[in-house]
Amino acid sequence: MIEITILVVMLLAGLAVGFYLRHREGTVRNAPATLDRDTAARDELLVAAGVTGPGPAVLHFSADWCGPCAAVRRVVADATADLADSPQPPRDIEVDIDADPALARALNVLSLPTTFVFDAEGRERFRISGVPKTSDLRSALSPLTAAL
Image: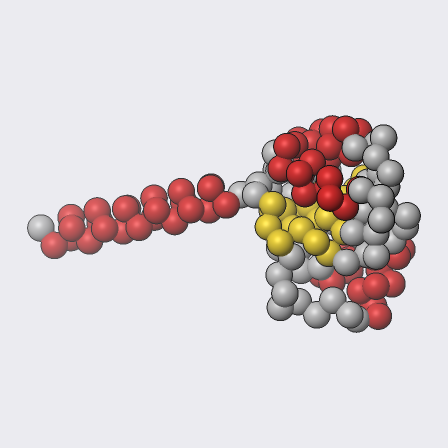
């Protein structure tokens, strides 16, 4: 009887963790404050990727073998197209994780797809793991595209 109880408890714990992770996936989260963002190597990699510029940038990591990355491409393209007429239109930057693993390491990318939103100064503002919703991404980008 105790084995069945342990099995049921483990199954319920697994379900709870699964629901939590599923709920968290694709949500726009503020950038973690614990990462060291002021390293010269990281800044060099971001400049090389094209993150710095006149307006905000949406940087998303993908790979040929990543199925959900195609959905991220569509979501980012839709959100940036919706805000193309704003004073500081956002830029869509896609980086292949296999071609640029150094940037992925510098930004602490642990899974694909991962999307970042950078402001005009090149500071990381948001991080999204999984496929974001177009409306959430648009909401995160809108304040960054307004005129100064």
